[in-house]
Image (cartoon, rainbow, N blue to C red; front, side):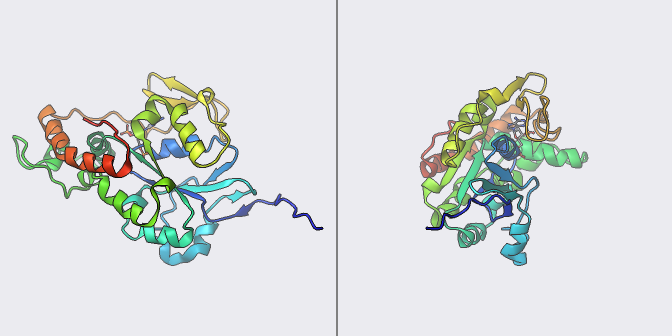
Length: 267
Ligand code: A3P
């Protein structure tokens, strides 16, 4: 009888799990928290294979992955997969059993977060209200403006559900990831069939930053938060404009709650 030897040499493999979105909902936090797990190996930067570089082929993609040992999970996160029309079909072609993770957050806050990121690069950008809404006093919502459009979560989810069963997609609350990261990470580890290694012992709340931060990680042994571009201050937004946006998202949110089977309770 020949016993198969465990693979002790790390090898690059295609991902077993993907964080597919949603932009500005906490995707970096989720990835960094997952990297605390010794059985998770993840590409550090966004690979953009299923949207921009698909033509380069699976070998190219595999080479972007970190080497993993048998029993470890290979991962990457590229939030634009969520809204790439061809991504579900392409991901399915790679591995129909892949596990998918998506973080979502109140779409109004998400839109402001998205805008804040753009405004940090282009200080001359008009006010959020002027881009998100027609005229002043604020009229209808500009649903073609990407920061607004990306908050309509039901449409992309429906596309992913045409290829993958609901049980293969974990939908994570971006709000809960901030309020109780350990509890949310318990769900994530269960979903990925990982031992529950990531617990409250890994986190502390940094009141200056207003976000949970890490006591230590693989790369740093001292307490640290995510980078300056995560957890930015948002600009003041006219409450009337906020109300318009909330009204706009209400039916879309309802559809998303139905489709996902989770009521996120966004106002
Ligand atoms: P803001 O910077 O607008 O607050 P992504 O990584 O998908 O781009 O998401 C960025 C958002 O992650 C941040 O948006 C922030 O609200 C959220 N976030 C969640 N947990 C965080 C954490 N521990 N530290 C910093 N930001 C966090």
